[in-house]
Amino acid sequence: MSAAIVTLKPGKDQSLRRLHPWVFSGAIARMQGEVTEGQVVAVHAHNGEQLGMGHYAPGSIAVRMLAFGPDVPAVADEAFWTEKLQNAYRLRHSLGLTGEGATNVYRLVHAEGDGVPGLIIDVYGDVAVVQAHSAGMYLARPHIAKALQTAVPGLRAIYDKSAETVPQKAAPGAQNGYLFGESTGHEHLVQENGHRFAVDWETGQKTGFFIDQRDNRALLARYAPGRRVLNTFCYTGGFSVYALQAGAELVHSVDSSKKAVELTNRNAELTGLQDRHEAYAQDVFTFLKDRHNQYDLIVLDPPAFAKHLSARHNALMGYKRLNVAGIKQISPGGLLFTFSCSQVVSMELFEGAIMAAAIEAGRPARILHRLTQPADHPVSLFHPEGEYLKGLVLAVD
Ligand code: SAH
Image (cartoon, rainbow, N blue to C red; front, side, top):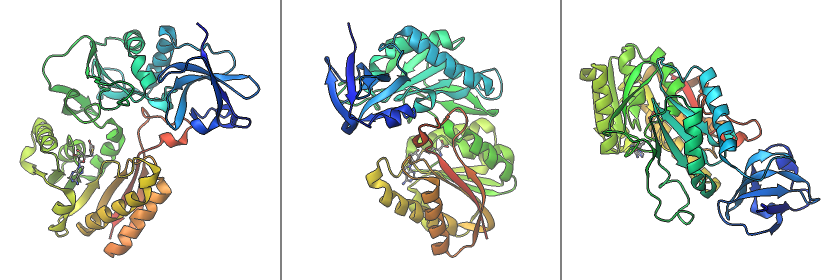
């Protein structure tokens, strides 16, 4: 069977030649052969030269590239997947994340950052959790599951958690479940920098844990000793656990989800220091309203305020409003750890919003650190959009 071919308009081959992995629908001149959602297609320049191959989808991003060049076969078989996943594993291994060390939870595959747009794989000890964000990746799950068993030594189970992330029309009725092996019970203990966490990938948000804050939590641990810490949007209490174990005087955690507050309490219990911890199931904006300079260190780590470019302006207003409220509650000389995980909000824009917040709160502030996502969430140089997490640590006078 010969592969379907997507041919680009004249001049629309430039970004692909620079290895940017997306083909927008407006760049396509014609399609040959039967092209269905999720199918692997060859992409040709207007002169007929093959530029590579990728997964087709009928949206604004029409092809997500899996390989570049004139010689790549227009198929993605098990050997193809094994090579991709072995490369991904090799990097994490070289980063010291895959051994029996202090950390056994890491991101194995970070979509475009690992040359596989639309695919996320997180590893929790000996279990991998797969999330397909495109029809192409969803259809490739049998290959991916096999290749994972080859690429990751000692894997006991693979859980597919794509039901919430795969486009609904492409996979109606998609259900989460095990692609290989199984697990007993819901609570699984993992370790991050030596801190223990109970994770539930079946019922938790995303794949169960926000792995992307690992390095930033470690930084917080350096500054937490003796401080009164507030961790807002705490989810499983990642920052709270680090603060407790680092010797914070007290830690308050806030999340609007009751389930998140239960998880945070459970994880605080695992530290044995829960008498210094209090968790509140409350809206963060409401919570911040009636506090007065109570904290020496505040973490603001909200969910993405902008999922699309069209929402960016409102998101910036949201970050400003949240940070005004947060900054007001910091004691003089205190620290603010503030984050945005909106991909469409650049560091420059985020910094502008935080500056506006400090002005409105009437508090002088200095930048001590600029933060981002850790090395197991790599960003392709050719796809700078992959850098989604931005953070600032401010000293607030
Ligand atoms: N900081 C966390 C991840 C945050 S995820 C970590 O390190 O793991 C975002 C969290 O914000 C979710 O748990 C969600 O329940 C919570 N949330 C969203 N809107 C909220 C609001 N208005 N008030 C309080 N919590 C909120």
